[in-house]
Length: 210
Length: 287
Image 1 (cartoon, helix red, strand yellow):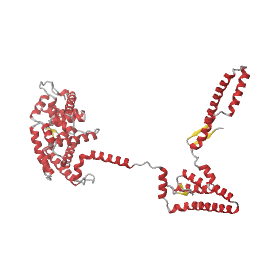
Image 2 (cartoon, one colour):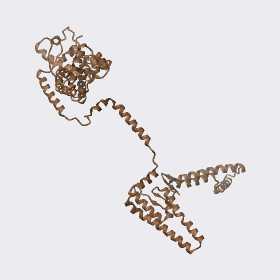
Image 3 (cartoon, rainbow over the protein chains, first blue to last red):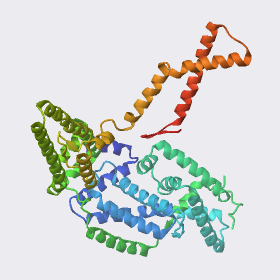
Image 4 (tube, each protein chain N blue to C red):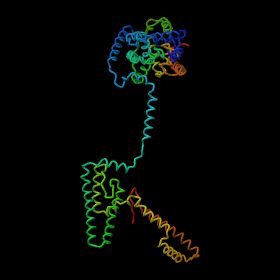
């Protein structure tokens, strides 16, 4: 492991991420050595996260599926160029984000939304209950409406701001990781995030309780 | 539908965005995803890379050196070009290329001219011989001295025409067929009418040759006293004296007349210049 890799890894946020990056690097080295089947493990590990990032950026599940597949193909084709200076997860995210950005810029005027089903968890179910009248009949309708409004608000943001919000608020990446993925400074990430949140708050004001 | 505003619970933007995490595709989606991905992966393996994408392993390591290598190559090319650059004299280049381009086909064109030249030389030789026999040695010398300037004129005219070289007006091979025909015709005309050709196409041709004498003449008129100026001064003086009845001081009148004549002479010069039309390489006069 060279010095630059060590420095980069110290910048990556948590010890879990560090451990994850190390284990990925072992798998990547196997793939680079010719063990093509080892790449399947990486696909299984990251497919949902890659899909989620692209889906939240595009708000279209068909496009998201295609772009996620393309992301894995690109990663597989150029895995020999991956030298472990960043974590595999950051590298893969960068490919995914760039693919999505290219797709969105190409199809700026063509926007079709198609949403995945909302799988409620305990925590989300709680505040959905708070937001609705706790009426079973109205609840489903309200959830659908909320989902649409959320996606509409996200789509009103610029592509860059949407990407930052997606990576930080939905995927839970750190500022440093987002900066690495988007190839910009941490300060830029913070300012973009602040602006995007302001926009979203004004859009979703009726659903917020201070 | 609007949210329940009666509730006192706190809902933040982060909570709303957390809802997005719950949007997940169904389980069967992943099976299809896996299948399609496998197909694309195999297709990507089968697709042949273009030759420019298949770089040898040695060149892959040089990928980071593309910029410095390219800059070095450009610099080396520039230095090489500057080192070997020589400004070429067009006359030398033309004659050199003419030497190389001498072809059998052009010899057919050049031969009649050369034959005429040799005929002319022979004829002049015969003339000299007959003159020497018929008249005295002084007459023969005079003839020969009269015959000598012909090749000299040809040589001087050849100096102004790069495709003609040598005292005998040897035809050099020009570059294009049209230039070759022009050269052949010129050589034939020169053989037939040498005085006319030297007068029209001699060394004193071109724009400067035509303009410089005119300009010199105008300048001489300005500097040297014009023959008619004195007469004009006198006429002007008599006119002034006759009309106004005023006869100025002789000394003053002389200087005034000089000034007036100078003014008139400038006017005349302006008129002559306005009559003189200079356009490109042509010179025209208006009468």
